[in-house]
Length: 346
Image (tube, rainbow, N blue to C red; front, side, top):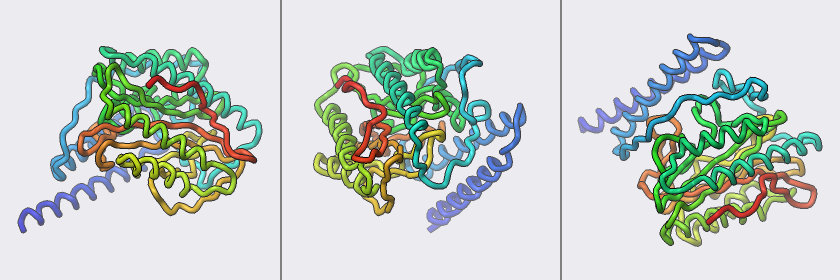
């Protein structure tokens, strides 16, 4: 009984600390300069402490990443999104936008660039190469194209690419750890160019991956393809979740529910939220809607947790995950994949 009381008190403590952090975050808005950075650092350290304490409280396994290198430079002539300097993301639209022809053309260009960047990142994945080294090369490639790496300082994210190996589901921070033969790694590449965003993700096998890993990657790719097949005017978002789940269920994989696709355009993350699990979200698609579909499948349970860095999302059971993502436009007679490209290496 004492143990139950101690656990309840601990949970109340965490809830109170979380509320305090939220208040601290809201009080920072509109500030700038060194005071803001000190408060951001304090908040980040407190969040990490909360996450570590929650890990102890709930019996989650401990995870430690590698060393994260210094921030990289972006040339001053590169146009930046609103969060680039402070890391603070302004409130986005409350409803899904219908994009006009001019915006759609800009999104096509951003989507093509995002896909070239993803292809480049995947081509660099090899045994003995660190994800930080891949991030450095990707960062240079993006700015050489006159674009801004969209993840860079988005809510304080410190890198230009998300790199998520093995049991990391998404939002992995590139670091000093090197890829090993047999790894499965997802790269999420996104850019900001001409005032709009392009976003896509793919999973590749590093060296001699076992059959089970390759089946997981193939199933996740097939889940995305099945979801795209249902995108058309008049379709409901529930059909996307059903399509992804049908593939996962048939092959014995879990579907991550907590992380979704999203609307995209002049805002990085906007309505609608696109669930890949079965759901009852009633939202009818119309021509001009642009959003991402990005299913994340797991070998075992889809239960997850967030590591102490506040970003890295991992499977709770330590088994592998895979992810594929496209940005898609709803057209008058179906859809257009804005991040289409050649098949990624298997």
